[in-house]
Image 1 (cartoon, helix red, strand yellow):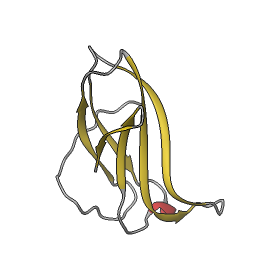
Image 2 (tube, one colour):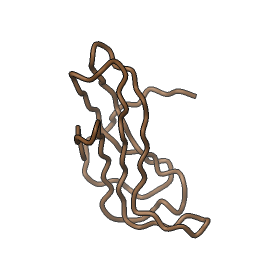
Image 3 (cartoon, rainbow, N blue to C red):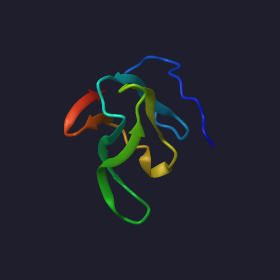
Image 4 (tube, one colour):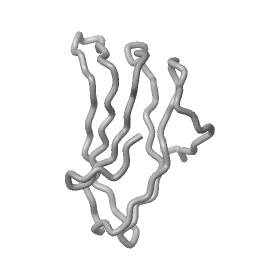
Length: 103
C-alpha cells in the first residue's frame, strides 16, 4: 500500500505511543537523474525482541530525480512496543556523504 504523507502538526515533542509518526518535508536540487539517498534514524538505545540493542538505523535507497530535484516528505512511524523509548530521535538525509537535512 502506498500512502501520501503529510505533516499535520509542527512540534518538537512527539507522544510515545504506537501509530505515531514524525518527520519533515525536504527538497534537494542539482542531483543526478538517479541518486542514492541514505536515510539515517538515530534514537535512544532500544532493545528488539530478538535481544539486539540498537541506537540507529540506516538505509540506502536509489531514487530517480525529476530534473535533478527530489521533493518529498520522509518520516518514521512508531509501530512496535520496543520502539517506545523516550529521548531524542533524529532523522538525517545524506547524499554521497553530504548531509542534506537533519531534524
